[in-house]
Length: 179
Image (cartoon, rainbow, N blue to C red):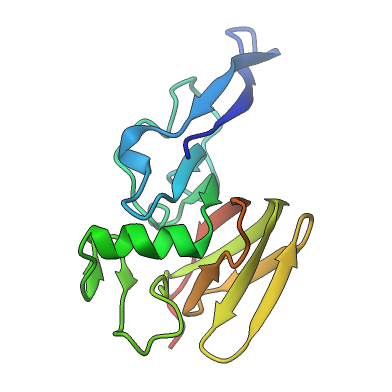
């Protein structure tokens, strides 16, 4: 299901005074909705560290990619449909060993979850609506609204075992690969 978020962005005018440069709804574009029904709203992206706070261009106007740019960050909200719906759509879309080039690995019928993936990032995940299960290679944790996970470049997946969508805000920051 597509959704909208109001995004307000500050900036600077020609005299260096603080101003609001953006205020409006940001919705899930068609290109950011997967075959599984998962929807993504990109809110901001940086291309360097330290970040460049000059200019007023929308840095999210680009094709979707899971990790942030090298030495950059990305801020997004993801809406996960219930796994019962998500897996049915994944199977109908013909997910094989690699899913649409997005870095997701489907490791076979005996896999714990088809969404296992890994990025060279540190991620801050905040549940903003519903509940979701964070899965690691070993272990899992139920996360409810307000819970936070610091995900440090580990292989992981997200399972929504409820009958309602779950929304999670993510901040992904480029990181060195784990040896």
